[in-house]
Length: 135
Image 1 (cartoon, helix red, strand yellow):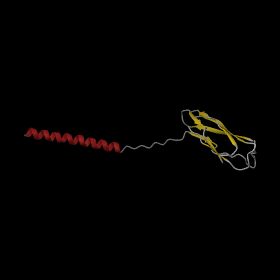
Image 2 (image 1 turned 180 degrees about the vertical axis):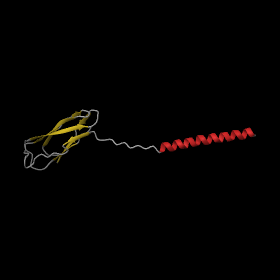
Image 3 (image 1 turned 30 degrees about the vertical axis):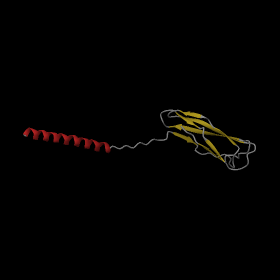
Image 4 (image 1 turned 120 degrees about the horizontal axis):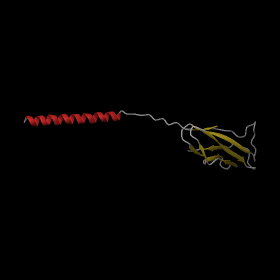
């Protein structure tokens, strides 16, 4: 009888230790937290540009070229795709030429050109061009 009692005492003690260890381990896992902040590695300047000012008017049949500076703060080269743009109003007779893809070296910079050509018959007005580079 004493051996059975000793067996159950040891069994209960082991069960308690295992259960307490699992509970402690579960608690420790639930208290681990982390914050990850990912920075945008590519910057493009200027972010906006204006064509046709009183100092430099833009007339039909003219061409305007805007140079963009692309800088990469990350260590790896990044390809920037300029394939997406819109002109508003959509029926504006403006031709926009963008580079298809530009590779910006890691920890470096490069330039790209945006060319805007007004047709001969473009009516006076204000138009907007939205360029959406992606990587």
